[in-house]
Every structure is written in structure tokens, then in C-alpha cells.
Image (tube, one colour):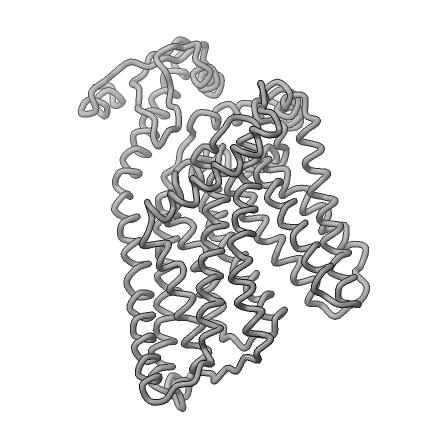
Length: 498
């Protein structure tokens, strides 16, 4: 591309605005690269040993055993993903989080491409990429427990993977709706059903959220879309809804599901707790994370406002009224979706654990960004003279400054954790080599230095009968493993045999 030709005819505001888009995209990508770098230092932890043993011994039987008897085994899709990981990336659990991080970015950008096609918006390509990547950035930036949610395989395949594949599914469904062929092909309906069935099978919160989303879209389509487009949309969403319901049924009927439920709350308490816990999460977000919440609204507001001003957008009275109505209804929809993602945890255990709250974090991020986008877009065609142009110029400077600074600042903060992750991975590798040497020499009851768990994930215990130790012992092919306390400064000396 000829750079001079590209900038020719663009105003100063447009050039600053596009610089902000490019810098923001680069910042978002650098931040995710920093996270992927951290994820590359992931090693086997807790359940990972049990899963590795199960699939190494009998891949098909392991899948059946997990579904029939395993804790959380009613979630069948994560079992398949773990099994596939063991077959393709044996001893390399660090590959999975890296792949899924970038797959989610691709899915989000694809989704916004299809949204742009659906609404017929004249957004530039940079703006589309910015919108997709910014959702990932703000969601990951505010995640409660990044390690458990994204890096630890046993949790990532349960709670982050369905978000990745759910995003890809949403983009795929929009792609089908954007095609001009009518009616839908049978293979498209089958693909929608199967995909929703697999996405829902990662976890109950994922499926509860998927069912609620599909139901809301079906009701909205029935109420506001005219024929014949309505019939096509309802047909596609209906088949996806069937797949999501089948997923819920399969997980409910798992024998392991009934053993782990315990004593669920009554209906009244369940509804009350779900409403209360959702409120606690939403209110605590604004109290604990005020700056990311503010910027989640401000950036898309500036983005759509400046874009609207530079393209001389004009909204009719009816469209402006629809946007303001959407802004008013969106908080209620957000609250319902947060409750849906919380409901399985409330029914089974209480307030969701940290890794389960990522669904709600994503929902809130999308809601805040939607509110900002609608606000900026609805204000874009307000009349104004020279003073208004100066305000737009200042807004473009502010947008570019935030886009250039905030994501790179977050990337630097994430990169500062690389030495910590790297050192622990190196110690883990040294211990792994040490244990294998002992096993190869014929020792069967091993005593090794113990590490402390990280970010709430259990490490080996000093009792050889602990379930993590039992799985680790079987993983290394020995009779038993237990840990002893060794000062950190002597760990390398211990592993080297000096």
C-alpha cells in the first residue's frame, strides 16, 4: 500500500483517529502475546495428572469412565478436548492455552465482521478489528483468576474453551444468516445443532448461558423481525437451541452428576441467591475495577462518536429512539445473563468460584462496551459548528492517547510476571527429570521436595494417599510419591544430586 496515497484526502482528525485504532490493535495484540508467553510456562497441576493417566491407559475407556464416575465427568466436551490434547500434545499442556487465546481473538474479529455485514455498517477494517480485540482485552484484564481460567488445563478446558468455541459458533451462525441462500441447507441445521451441543457440553454454566442467549434471540427475532427473514433466523436458532437443550439433558443424566450435587437449595432460595450473587458481582466490579469499567464505556463511545462525526452520519428520529431504548434495556439483559451463568453454581455449591465468574466478566464487558458504543453513535449527528469540531479533535486525541497507553501498560504489567512463571516452570522441569531418574533406577516409593500451590491450584501433598499424589504416582509409574519441605535456595542443589 502506498502510504502517501492512503493518507491523501484525510483530515487531521481522521489521521489521529486511525492512528488510535492501529495503536489500540497493536496494544491489544501485545497484551495477549504477553499472556500467551505466561501460558507457555504452564505445567501439569492437580487434575492434569489424573487426566493424563486416564487417557494414556485407555483413551476411549477414559472418556467413558470420566462421564460415568469422574468428578465433573458429566461435562463431556472438556473430556474430549483433554483427551485430544493428550494425544496431540503429550507432556505439553502449555500448548492448549496459547492456541485458545489466539483462537478467541480470531473468533471475536470474525464475529464483528459478520455483525458489520448484518447491520450494513460502513466501518473500516481497523475499526472492526479494534472492536473484536478490545472485548478480549478488557475481559482478560479483569479476570478474577487468570491462571485458573486460562492457563490451567483442567479448568481452561471447562470454562475458557466454551467461550472460545461459543464465539466461533456465534460467528458461524451469523455467517449462515448473512448468506443469501434460502432456505437453510440440512447440513447447516445439523452443524448448528451439533456445534451448540458440543459448546454446551464443556460445563453447565456455559450451557445455561448458551440456552438463555439463544432463547433471548429467538424471542427478539419473533417480536421485531419481519417475514421471510424471521423464518430463516428462527429455524437456525431453533436448531441450535435443540442442541443446547440436548447438551443439558446429557449432562443431567450423567451418573456422576447425581453423586456430586449433594443437597441443592429449594426453588425460592435458589432464585433469591442467584439474584443476590449476580448483584454482588456486578456491584463489586464497579467498586474494585473502576478504571477498566470506565474505559470499557469510554473507548467505544469515543470510537463511534468520532467515526460518526468524521463520516457525517445522520440518524432518523426512529433510529435514535431505538438506540436509547436499547441502552435502557441492555442492563436488564446483562443481569439476566449473569444470573444464567451463575445459576448452576448456585444450585450446586453457592457463590461461583473464581474461574466460573469469567462468563459474567465477559457479559459485563460486552454490556459496558455496548452502552458506550450506543451512546457515542447516538450523539454522533448532533449539530455543532467550529466549537464542535474542536471538541471532536480533542476527543480523537484522547481516544488515541488511551489506545496507545493503556493496553501497552497492561502488557508490561503482565510481562513482569514472566520471570516468576519461568522460574517455576524450570523448577517443575527439574523435578520432573529428577522423578523420572528415580523411577528409571527402580525406586518405587519416592520422597521429593514440595512446591507450594499457585493461584489456588493444588500441588503434591506430604501424604502419599492424597488424590493428587496418587495420580502423580501413576503418571510416573511408581508406587507412591510424597513431598518434604526443602528451602527454596536448596531446591536446585537437591535436584542436581549435589
